[in-house]
Length: 468
Image (cartoon, rainbow, N blue to C red; front, side, top):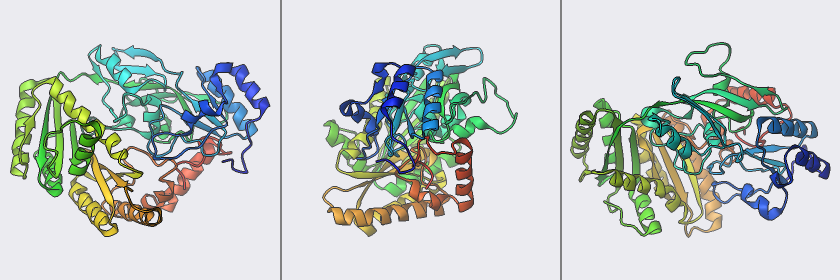
């Protein structure tokens, strides 16, 4: 798919790319390009004309300068785990992979900072800093395969965002290649910095539309020494949602508070052929506290259990060992894959103020009933972020194509009425961009377009994403 205002990748351009990189880092064979044609967003495929695998910032700068001058679109790509189509090369052109720019350059134990390249896998970074008693909290479900650069592009969160925040709360400095090939270095190892506009934060969540990040300075924390985890079943979705708000009303802040409805849990049970506790319950909450004072954590988890039982929980299961804790979290992280394996699906990444969670769940279930569709919900309930998966199953194509956009539009409209937005952590990308006007005013959208135009007047960097 080539837009009329873009040029194709010519043999002359391929030769220039080979001079900058090497033969093996310039991929043109269709079979080898296929993995770069999709991410984890439903069933979408767009084949690039060439995939490039640079190793240095300078190489990326040279590539961008050539592509800008030649009017060839460039799609940056991290680990390919995105869920909004942000890394899909929808106009062909160049797919620029950061997989070889993957070093942890420095772990600064004096300033509690780490300097990394964008291709570092999130879990690998966490494991390395933990060896030094340090902690990088953001933990998206795909942490075992997603890249830090992609986390930054989408402002990834995960279960621990409830207590520790999301990616944007940890990024203090960047090295960025701009669309025309210039290199800038906003921020640094500074806890305070108000010297001009905050360009660092502008790039976070920009989904690769403003520049290609080649180096990242992240804040670290001391590693919590203890964790306590409980799994709590409920006979109603509403009771689970309301109970969660009561925990916070009692001034207890878990480090994670996850919600799973029965259909989600049973999908994981079926997919992986492993019995899950309380899988017949209408809803489960997975709750965790952490810190460095074990008696305090024991009192907190006990109090949370009491509040849950008072709020309608049928039981409270306490993980007594690290192995049990790991099993519970493995179960939670397996749900996404299990639900998506049922059939064709469409996932929505709704987010509302935490206190509005009971109302959000009520609205989603009403829409499910109204349109006679199957919506399976789970997510980071502690920060109001629910993943609503609409499952096609045996629905005929005509009804699916008619009902789906109506249901999504209604879900997003109700979410915005509740003070929420249409994406909490998956981004807008390719698949959600036409819904963005539901969440943002025309003035806000116009400002975003103007910002994009300042950085990328030719619109060659990740075109067709984010902006409707």
